Length: 328
Ligand SMILES: [Zn+2]
Image (cartoon, rainbow, N blue to C red; front, side):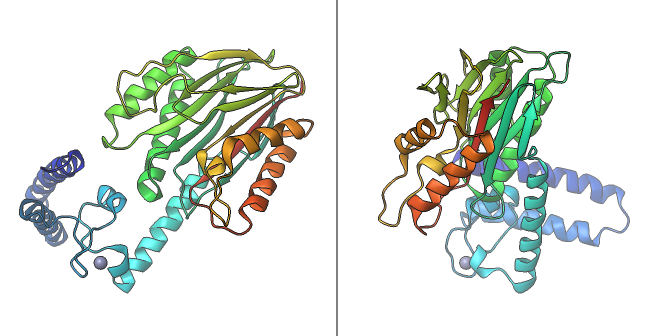
């Protein structure tokens, strides 16, 4: 039986075919449109014959994320022509630039908060989501978001930018944090290919030091508060799994010197040369021993410790770390 993703791609192709035919009917110079229509028909024919998604050179499976972004591809990455390869590299470079353009400033001071993050994609593009959004109405609330979209590469990068747009839009709406994440979950769910999802931790921080945290299936946020470390774990499932997810929040007060650390599992699941996992415990100990540092210095200390632990072993996933320190 065809999986849900194939059914989705087929319905997308049929819809685009319809649009092409409409364009063909009203266009006079239509050679390129006709070529495109032939390519769409050929892809639909491959779906019928059961050869869709198979490289025509080596007969291996074509990378799924490439099929999602372009169902007309017929060759795996290893068997592109020279000009196809060049075009792909240029597209990736552009996607990478666009994605970097979505990131907030790396070091920020805002309404009594000292904020710093490190964003390290595994390849040119990342499936990690990282944002800092001051509330745009009268309040001085600020929102911190860190997320991780399932999968890697271009498809994950596209979903990451979708999350970015959804949150940037909803933050201005005046919804409570819980309602905001629930609405975002529905929008994300309705617009996502069914097998993809995103974990996310969203924090609303007020000007008096109060924070509210919503954790949708993400790694626990680590709060170093008054000499003690508190884990703020998942309060709901990842976004995109169910359209009607419920997302309760947790509240805490941060005093001057308290620090909150958000990270993606690219950090805690990093491996050393002999396959040991970095783990959340080592990260907790690091924060506890270095809690006097500024946000920027703490992020740098975490990255240094990770690099030392890996001792040259390659990273396996996109990695993001964000430190939020109360300074007022
Ligand atoms: Zn191939």
